[in-house]
Structures are given as C-alpha cells and as structure tokens.
Image 1 (cartoon, one colour):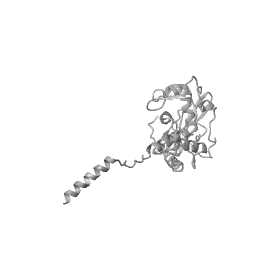
Image 2 (image 1 turned 90 degrees about the vertical axis):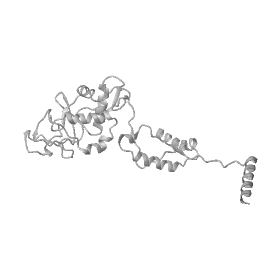
Image 3 (image 1 turned 60 degrees about the horizontal axis):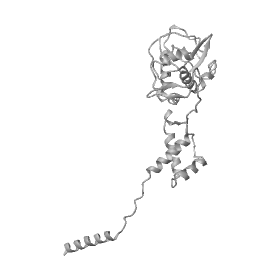
Image 4 (image 1 turned 30 degrees about the vertical axis):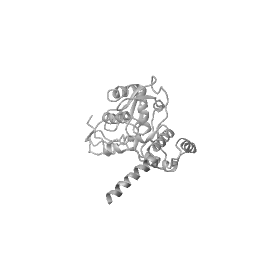
Length: 272
C-alpha cells in the first residue's frame, strides 16, 4: 500500500486529543498506514495485538481490546463483519490516488459504486462519508461490548499502556473513566465545607473561579481527571501554601531603645 500523509487537522482534533492514552493515538496512526484506499483494514483482537505489540506498550490482548474500545467511543474506528472476518473502517478517511484498490471487503459506509483500478484522481471517491446520507447510520455492525470494558492497566514509562490486569478480552478490573470539568461548574456544598474546615481564611469563591478557568483551559487528556474532588483539595492546599506570610512587627526592647539613643547622640555630635 502507498505511504500515507497525516493531515494537520488530526493533531488538533478533539476526538484524537481526548483519547485516554498515547497508545490509543499510536494505534490509530498505525491503522491509517495499514488501511486500504477506502479506509478499511483487517480487525480482530489477536491480529491487532500482534501488530501493536511491536510499536506500542500494549502487551496483552486485554489492553488491545481496551484500546479498540476507546477508538470506537471516539468514532475514530467502526467495526463490521463480512462472513467470519472482523474488519475495521476509519471514518473520514481520504485518499487522493490515481489507482484505487481494496485490501479487504468494502465497509457499509463506503460507496460501493466507486470504480477500482486507474480512475480520475478524486478525493471524494475514496472518502467514506460521515453524513446522514450514508446507507448505514453511524455505529458498528458487530457486538462491541467486549471492547467497552476498560481494563485497569499499569501505565508504562513514556508512551502507552503497560501490563494489563486479567486474562482474555475485556476481562479485568473496571475502572472509572476520566472526565473534564463540566461547563458552568461550581463547587458542591460538601466541597465548600471541606475547604472551610481544612483551609480557613481561603476565599472559596475566588479559588473556585481560578480552578475552573485553569482546568477549562487545559486541552485534551491533560484536562481530564478521575477524581475532581481530590483535585480540588490539592488545589486548595496549594493555594494556602502560596499565600504570603504576614511579617510580625519588630519587637521594641530596652536594648533597642538604648541603641537608638546612642546613634542619635553620635549624629548630634557630628552636626556640631
């Protein structure tokens, strides 16, 4: 298959940036290079695990299934079946080749009338539409529940996912999904009560405004948290530590008074 060009829009796409791990992003880019001219490629957890284990830190089939689930949730991939073959389609995939070829059977989201072989160079011919006029609505044609459970995996150093917990596809401890701070967020009464008790003197209103402004401005995965209350507690503690410490007024003692008197006498003699 030909070399692929990654469009600039990908690096700014919310779908891409909001993926939970760098291994998910590397997986998607790897699929782009593997897809045929219509954005379709062979699927299946076992096959994809063998493909991804050499270029990511995905080292188990369970972690592979978790990664596929994240890509499905973001609608970066769609899964379909032809006979016993499990296949993957990349929505919004584009190709500008003169010669169009298929590696795998066409997906339901592709235009089957597109001619193969040498044809007029057209971006639209190999573009799987992502509009309501496609003959199959957005979604998947196979049971993707195996990909929906997130496996609690250890994060490796650097890029991607480390060793998974559990054996088999979708087996493991289910963990909560990180989320962004909602628009219009305000701290709950229990949060304010904790702040008043543990950070006395801290202006909760100003703290909440700075907290929301900061986290709403963080893009992509870095702006997501599993425990926002815990993040709030750490934020408040840091605000307390950053407050300037009021300096105590100098203490006046008899010794200080005597020293001041002697300095005044020397200055008076020097003026005579």
